[in-house]
Length: 181
Image (cartoon, rainbow, N blue to C red; front, side):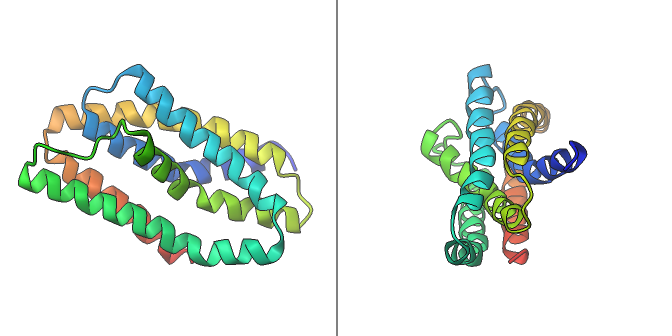
C-alpha cells in the first residue's frame, strides 16, 4: 500500500473528530492551548488505537461492535447536540463543560468507532494496519487542534447562537454514523 491510500483513509476518519473539535471550540470561545492539545491528543490516540484494535479482534466480535457502533455514536452525539442546543436557546448558566475529560472521552470514542471497522476490514484483506493507524492518529491530532481554534473564532465572532450550530453539527455527525450502519 502506497502512502497516499493511508493518508486518504486518515483524512476520512479524522473528519468527525474535526467537526466535534470545531463544535467544542464554538462552545469555549476562548480555548487555552492546553485544551486544544488535550482534545487533539485524545482524538488522535483513539483514531490510532481503534484500527489496531479492529485488526486484533475476531470476526464475530468485530461484527457485533460494527452492528451497535452506529447506535452508540448516534446516541452520544445526538444527546450532547440536543443539550447544546437547549442550553443555547434557554441561555442556561450551567452548560456542558467542554473541558471535562469524561465528555472528551465520549467524543473520542464516538468519533473513532469507524476506525475500528477500518482496521478490521484491512486485516481481512491482508493489508497493513499500522501505517493507517499512525496516519489516522497524526492527521486527527492536527485536524482536531486546528478545529478547536476555528470553532473558537466562529463562536467568538457570532455569539451564543453558535451553540445551536455546534449542537446541529453533533446531531448531523450522529445521524451520519447511524446511516452508515
